[in-house]
Image (cartoon, rainbow, N blue to C red; front, side, top):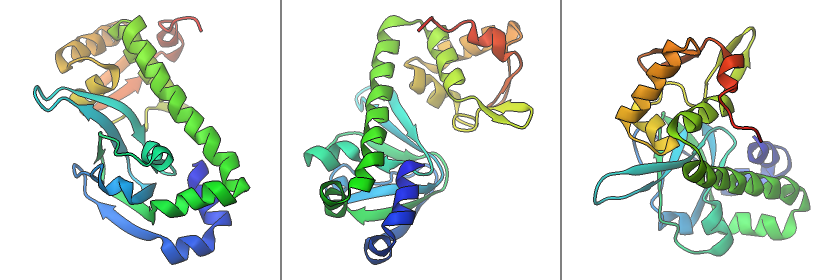
Length: 218
């Protein structure tokens, strides 16, 4: 939410002058890598997956999910080079789109923006580093539990998985670096252990305490 808050509170005039709202339907590509050379966006509504895809065999690795307040594409913003990946809408998405040079100007001239922008960049770097180490060091069950644990949110007395719920099993598999068949087997194992329940695309937490015991010690 950092980027959105700063944009709304401190950069109101620039937003009104340069920003434009764009709507993207579920399943559509937000922008091609070449378009991100000129445009930068902040998500206002919906979820977006950022993926690398092997177009020869169709295999996909989801790098991370973006939602309200997130920004894209930071890599192109910082190095001014084409960043070959795919940004696809998981829901109907609403974006606030800017000329990318405007963000570069903010980085150079707006210290208050940088105070929030730099920690946001660090978080994305940390998330990608965690993904790389998880794929190398942990088995599929552990990676799945880590994904669930990372996305647990409390709503009153209940625990939900708002960001990853309603995703297809193919997408969940792509998040943890496996295939649907293996993911389903792991979901059923956790279900039989009484840790979760699975109904269609919904995952329900039944025993978070014992579920989290599957996590490796940090």
